[in-house]
Length: 68
Picture 1 (spheres, rainbow, N blue to C red):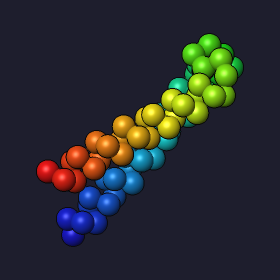
Picture 2 (picture 1 turned 30 degrees about the vertical axis):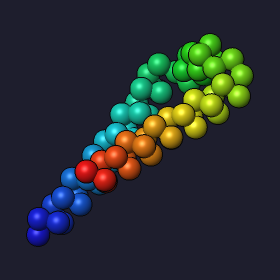
Picture 3 (picture 1 turned 45 degrees about the vertical axis):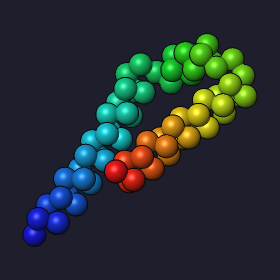
Picture 4 (picture 1 turned 90 degrees about the vertical axis):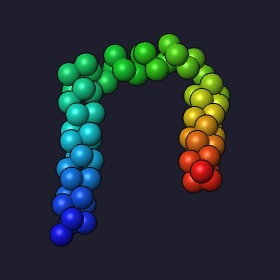
């Protein structure tokens, strides 16, 4: 029973996070978010480097947590 409640809460949290994200995009406007992203990452190369760096850091943290 506890697993079912935990699964429901996890699913609810996922839907709430997605809903909040969509609400922010609808309120602020996609063009404002896009212009901010273009200002931060003027080229696709910079964006790809950022994504790879974040993925590497998150993998390193997950590996360290699993180890300890």
